[in-house]
Length: 451
Ligand code: NDP
Image 1: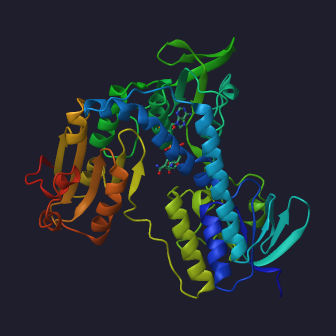
Image 2: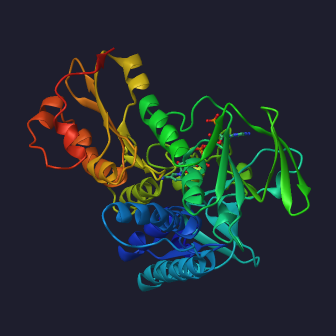
């Protein structure tokens, strides 16, 4: 049977674009459909614009620090309008790069929605049908928020990059990556920021001591964080949004943002009819090679809800090409993935948290928390944390957790050692780089506790 293409990819985000262009570069005939902008969540409404906003939000504090270091400078006002113009010009530039990558590798693109018609056929929004030997589903995910009175008055992280003006008062709901990162950003940009999180401590699932310090520092910097608090009801009151919370508070905000999780984009894709299995959240169920139960259909990235991070989607896309087009079956390794949360201060983490590790085996915990030189000189009370979780039996470092400015950069490197199976003694025989914050990772002599 002959097909229009060797591969049809649905979704032009990080994973889909990578798989499409690498397969095409290897000689496959490839097409890709994207209904929105190329680059997907990461480039257009996630990691990239978010990080640029983190950078923007950090300047206010830098002026104070510079003054403490003897510079005679004053902070002016933050101009959201001029920043926003530059931000979107940068996103346009990046989208152009993604489009060019596809074009230069000979991938045919369709700027419209696509859904599955049968195991080898995709139907485009204009009604045309395209056949392919293999189909890769890479539609990503979207923000979801609770169904409650007035919820439509809120926004999600998709809309935050498009605000006409910065709000004076903002409420952020949630305690995950997105909520905590935007609480820091908005607070840094001068917005009076309140955060409600329903659980006992934000960043559930990460090491308790690390997330505790992040929360403490967020509050120290001015975020009005309320744990054990959720939102009950919202309604419009003049220009403001009136919000009633579970703690009894009734308050007015200019803007309310929900960061209450994301759902895979599998609605109305024709998947169930084909027998492609979906999980409880609507995620596509795949095996270790990203293959669904329908042999010609594969899925990668957030639409599979495995580890929802751009570099993971890219890995999954590369492994798919290796498996399907290079005859080299390659499972995706989801173990020991380093990650950073761009809160202020940042958190970088790889491996097991203390609570998780001690459930599995006897451990030693090495940790130190201190005021870093640069901020301490500037008169800030800010503290950082360097923490290692070590297996008593194998001596391997099972987890490394860093809360500090630049923790994302540090954990990328520590992640190599942990991934290689480095022991505590390997860390110890590495000479310290002085004076740095991360040198503490190789100079901690005694465990603070065993468990
Ligand atoms: P998360 O799943 O991380 O967090 C969702 C938060 O919303 C949790 O605190 C959750 O509470 C809370 N929540 C869920 N439902 C409700 C509800 N009905 N009412 C109130 N609160 C609710 O999702 P995010 O949206 O923050 O991020 C999605 C994913 O995107 C992340 O998991 C991550 O994989 C990725 N991401 C990665 C980033 C990075 O690498 N730096 C940055 C941003 C996103 P509870 O804990 O109680 O369940």
